[in-house]
Image 1 (spheres, rainbow, N blue to C red):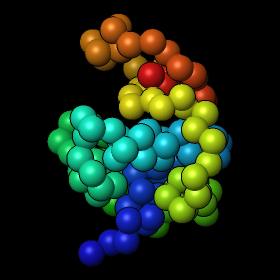
Image 2 (image 1 turned 30 degrees about the vertical axis):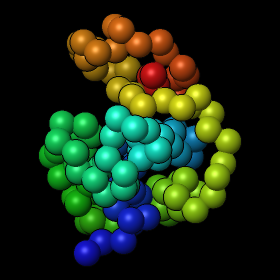
Image 3 (image 1 turned 135 degrees about the vertical axis):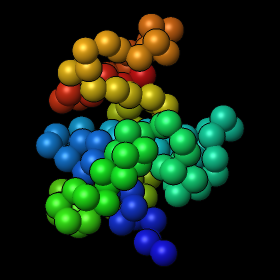
Image 4 (image 1 turned 90 degrees about the horizontal axis):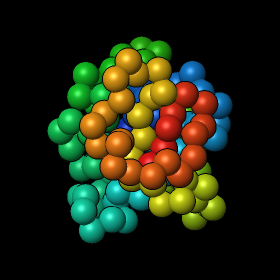
Length: 123
């Protein structure tokens, strides 16, 4: 079984591997916010593997990123989210998507944008 921080790091790489530390940490923060939310499962693993939530998990891209090894930056972002109670600059966000999408998800029209970091719009 893969350790939680490594799984989170792989998800971060698959979702935001080309973004800076803050963009990567925001993805991890959304996962942590979901773990803390009453509307989502109670563990990082369950949140990450919940069907149709994260494209990198749906497509198993997270296992193919860099031959299954997260970058140092992605691992650091995951480590910081998991082990430290850092300031949540996502404002408690539970959702995000890429600004590069041709069509934004329908759910995004009913949510307020909290912040945009890199190519992610965070709700």
